[in-house]
Amino acid sequence: MKPTNPAQMAGRSTEYADMLLLRFGEFTLKGKNRSRFENTMLRHVKGMVKPYPKARLIKEFGRIYVELNGEPAGELLEALAKVFGISSISPVKAVKPELEEIVEASLRFIEKVDPEPGTTFKVNARRVWKDFPYGSQEMNHLVSAPVLKTFQALSVDVRKPMLELRVEVREHQAYIFCESIPAVGGYPLGTNGKAMLLLSGGIDSPVAAWSSMRRGLEVECVHFFSYPYTSREARQKVIDLARVLSRYSGRIRLHLVPFTEVQTSFAGIGQDNLIVTLMRRAMLRIATQLAEREGALAIVTGDSLGQVASQTLPSMNVIGRATDLPLLRPLVMMDKSEIVEIAQQIGTYDLSILPYEDCCTLFLPKSPTTNPNLKIIEKVESLLPGYGERLAEAVAAAVTMEVTPHGNERPADEADLISSVKEDWF
Ligand code: ATP
Ligand code: MG
Image (cartoon, rainbow, N blue to C red):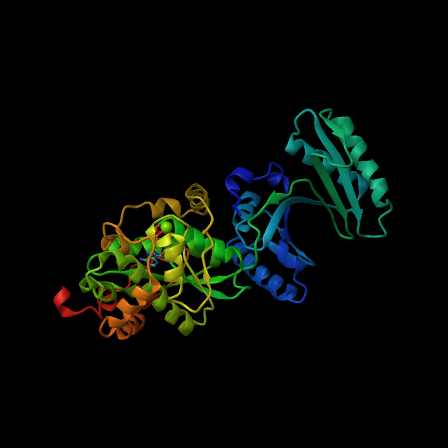
């Protein structure tokens, strides 16, 4: 579940490598979808490698090699470890398929890794090119003997070695590698369909977005704001959060929905403790209409069981019934500390803790109900004059932006965002 922190993991052998070997994750199990998944991954890898013009991609069954040709291995490793669907990366040394070259490179490789005394070791050679004069078993001995002689710190363990030096002999090159650095894993982006995610400015929902993308969902975000009660800065913060998320997807669509009219329609009902439940249900209804419009098949939220009044089980039950779409809550069973840790690793945490108000906190009653009654809530909603139209108006007034990693999007023009707000609210 946890992402890899590339700074911590950069392998010791990276600087000596000429290639990176990218291995695919669990999706390789899915028989007939395999080529679609692999092509999606290849496209994402190409996108990540684009800023490094000398790097070249070689696609093989179940893996991709990135030939570095002088491009920085560490930087590329860090970028590629974020690509969903890649399970691990090995820095690879490529040499001529000749015994002396292979032994020489193996020695230098181990030197870079600098094993501690007591490290157990084995060579795992594979002769892919059948005309190479030594077989796989023979190569294991021919390579391990000089390595063991040179590095006294190493002792052999053929069953569960701490360090496994892999040698693959192919016709044009032999590949040597010994580290397998964990990458983010999951499914290639968008290969499991599209969902509409409720993005607040908080810590949780960006983590829910990242977790969904990692499962192969394409995510579009919806954010509700309450002009003039929530500030321009609060909205910019959400755009900036979407920008961080777009680093993982290339781009991300963000729908900004004016929510003031809907919220104020709850003011006169005289039951403040129900407002949060009503507000959340309204958000889900609007998000559902947007999802249907945009072809998304699920709604995602950052809810975590028990976190606040609207996230008790009875509240989730009543709120969740406002949509017919599957309601996905990737963080539902996680502790806040686990969520925070992921937020830090994916780079959203520092933005999330900026102290701007959210539309929900503004209208928060003193004691929101933790145990709402569905019948009462439905009754209240049915008595709100023109409620359905208000929700539809909010959908129609949504402004859509496309956020990219290097863009500099500002909140859309105030004039656009508030076009549906009545005169007397200024
Ligand atoms: P977060 O959960 O993102 O940290 P939070 O904890 O302040 O923010 P909660 O009150 O826990 O927000 O809200 C639960 C979920 O409802 C959020 O994770 C998010 O999916 C959704 N949500 C809340 N406020 C908004 C908003 N203004 N716009 C869109 N979605 C929202
Ligand atoms: Mg939350």
